[in-house]
Length: 381
Image (cartoon, rainbow, N blue to C red; front, side):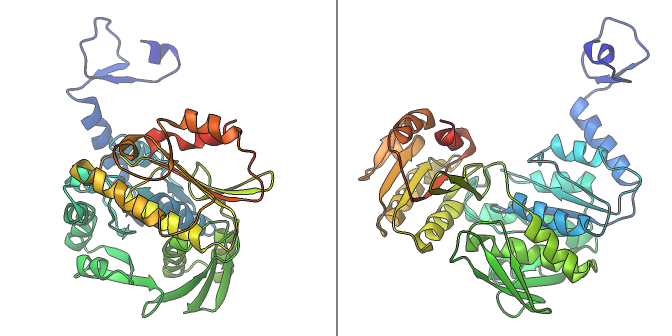
């Protein structure tokens, strides 16, 4: 009744309601009804629907692809990180009659999850950014990750869909066999480009099929595939080249995703929305390549790694020890259960208290960790 009093036209419920009201619709399962409504609404549109999933970079790729397409079409896309069994149907139900293209992000942490989303999203195009060491506990190892993410390709293959493939990854080429493809990569692809991130931000040089230099507000070479994907999608849908360039250059990451924060004289890479062994390694390697004297790293623990968690945290420590850092701080989780020579705190608030006292100047910093670690709190002083 509160929902109706607040202005809702109807309330859909799956509980016994004492009050009689023609604006209350009783169903067996509210969630299933939401998804069925989303599927019905989706089927009213005969337009491209692009589904994006992957272990790393899917949200950034979604944002870049949407930015490029929105420069030329009326697009609807997943807002923020609403990429689950509730967020995806809500995204579909937001689509209005003027829609020309839809971009949907799909997150998953177990088998058959992506397949379930495809039943009501009915994508016409799909992108798997990569298959890395994420949600290993739910997927059951790296092969399980590929199988779970590959459910998107299974749907496209069965329904005459199309995919955009990062051609540098052999396993993606193998997974995408039998599907119409457009490729992007650093060599031998429909769209070819290279990265230059010697400065604070990534510059991408597209060498085929056009000659274009794109100056991004993204940090790190690891964002190269995400940019190339957006270019490939834009070209496929005939977005003018200049609009593609302008859209990517105008995009600024937020929500603690590869976000460059300038604080006093410090350059801080805030990448604290999430973390897994693959993305953690890339972020460390990226900071190591930056030409700067004083480098600080604060890493929060990684979650949902199951029986491989201790070893994966040890692997991160082993990677850190290959370089010289001004300071390394590890926070929480299984970092407490392995041997390492670094400063350790149980949580981000304790790390923040330490951080405030340091008075760092003229440093490059990386702050990263799984969502539950809330590593962005280190900067909330």
